[in-house]
Length: 517
Image (tube, rainbow, N blue to C red; front, side):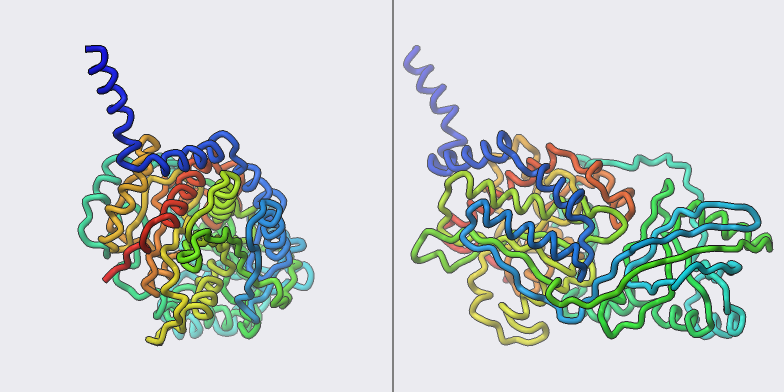
C-alpha cells in the first residue's frame, strides 16, 4: 500500500509538469526566480518616470530616455541594442514656465497645465473671459463672435456635470466582466473589458480618424487667433481636480500652432462658466513660456534583441513592445512607462536566466504612439510594406507574434486574441503554469488604440494584454497625476514575468504562431 501511495503521490505532482514538459518547467522556474525573487522592474519604472519622464514626442527628454534604455540593454548583455528613426518633421515642445489666475471679480489661482505644441504668450497677458459653448456649426460661431474676441481669453467647451464621487476611483476587473469577455464569440464591436473600434480599419483610415477627432478644432482655433484672442481655457471632467491636457496634436512642423491653450480643473471651469452665465465677467491673467524646436534625431524607436540560437529558426522573430512616449504634465509612469519597464524587465529576465531561445526575441519601444502610431507605423512600412498596398516584404513572414502592454500599470489578466481563434489553445497551454496568478483568461475580443493594431493590420499575430483598470481611466491617463505613486509593484512583477515566459515559449515552439485566416 505504501508503494502504491508513493506512486500515486509522485504521479499527482508530475501531472502539471509532464503536461507542459520537463524541460520547459525547469526553464520557467528560472524565469520565475528572476522575475519574482530578483526583480528590477520597479527600479526601471522609477528611472523612467522620476529621472527620464516625461517623454513627449520629439523632445530632448525623450531622446535622453531612449539613450538610457539603449545603454541599459547593452549593460545587460543584449546581442543588439539600436535606434531607428521614425519621423523627420515631428517637433519637440517644452514648457519653461507658466501661470494662470483669475484676478477679478476676486482672486483665484486656476489649476492649469498647457496643452502641448501651443504657442508661447510672449509675456504676461490679461483680459476678460468669454465662454463659447460647443456648436457643430462653425459658421454660426463665427457669425456670433466675429469682432468680439480681440484681447479676450476664451473659455471653450461644456460645463462639467456635478460629481459627488460616489463611484470608486480605482477598480479591478470583476469575475463577471471577465466571464462575459471569455464567452464572447465575435471580436467586435463591443468589448466588455475595454475600448474597441469594432470593425473600423484603424490603420487604413487612421489619417481620416485623426483629422476628424484629434484635429477637429483646428479651424476653430485658427478663427480665435485671427480674431485677436489672447488664449484658450478648456477642461476634461476628471474629478476631483485632475488636469487632463494631453495635446493639440499639431506636432508636425507644417501644422499651424494654436494660441496659448490651457487645460484647467473641472471645478475651476465650473466656477468660471457660472460667473459668465450670471453676467459677472472674470478677468484672466496668464503667461506661457514654452519652446518649439525640430530635432529629427530625437525621433527614434528603441530596439534590443536576444539572438536566436537555432541555426534554422534564428531568423524568425518574436516581438514584444510598448510605446515609450508620454504626455508632458506628469512623469508618464502608467502611460506608458509601466509598459516600457515591463518589456525591458522581460528581456532582462530571459537574458539573466541564461536561456537560449531558438528564435530571436526583439523588444521595441515605440515613439509617437500618442500622435497616431507614428513610430510603429513607420517601422511597419519600412520593414513590412506600405499601408494600403498589397505588396509585402519577406520580413513580414518572419515575425511569429507581437505582444504589447499599454493600458496602465494594472495586473495582466490574460490576452485579447484579436479574432484569432487558432491561437487560443496555444495560449491556454502556455499560460497554464500561471493559472494560480489569475492571468490565463482569453477572449476572442479585440481591443484598439495602441501599437498592436499595426501588427494585426499586417496579419502578424499581435496581442494586447488584458489588465486590471485600477485608476487608469479615472486618475492617471493623460493627466497631471500620471506618477509612480499609482504603479503597484506586485502587478508589475507579475506582468514582466508572465510576458517573459510567454515570449520565451513562443520563441521555443516548433512552428510559428498561427495567423488569422
